Length: 129
Ligand code: HEM
Image 1 (cartoon, rainbow, N blue to C red):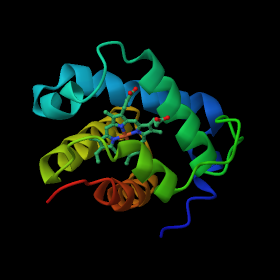
Image 2 (image 1 turned 90 degrees about the vertical axis):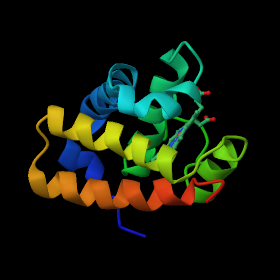
Image 3 (image 1 turned 30 degrees about the vertical axis):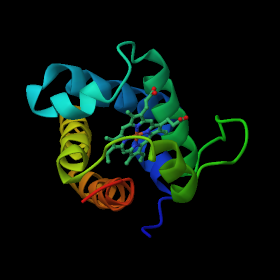
Image 4 (image 1 turned 90 degrees about the horizontal axis):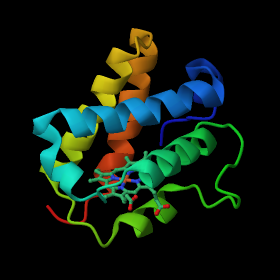
């Protein structure tokens, strides 16, 4: 696993992580290439936006906004096990995240390191081939 503990500061703390989660879901709602992954979500993405921001905040070494420290890949996998996630859904999720980071003008080195970390976890979320 990539060491994500210093990403919190490098991204710019909680405010920037909230922006990233929102941009991620804005891209998902906007880009038709992400339609499968969007269809897995509820119509109202308010809760999804907040949960993603909270998760990333803690995962990247910031405050534990989930209340309890559940944040680890096994916990996250359990929360995705009812979903139909294959390579296509993984790649659509990654499209939204890499586009969001690019649109928020992340430093290219940071973008690459985060992409590697996200890719590892997104692959782990797959529930089918
Ligand atoms: C690989 C493709 C992925 C797909 C298709 C996917 C899809 C979903 C869906 C449909 C939900 C439920 C949303 C809701 O009910 O509000 C969800 C929840 C969530 N996802 Fe993902 N996800 C993926 C990968 C990831 C990754 C890589 C992360 C983090 C790095 C992540 C973080 C979360 C979090 C924190 C939640 C809320 C969990 C909870 O409290 O139940 N997901 N995801």
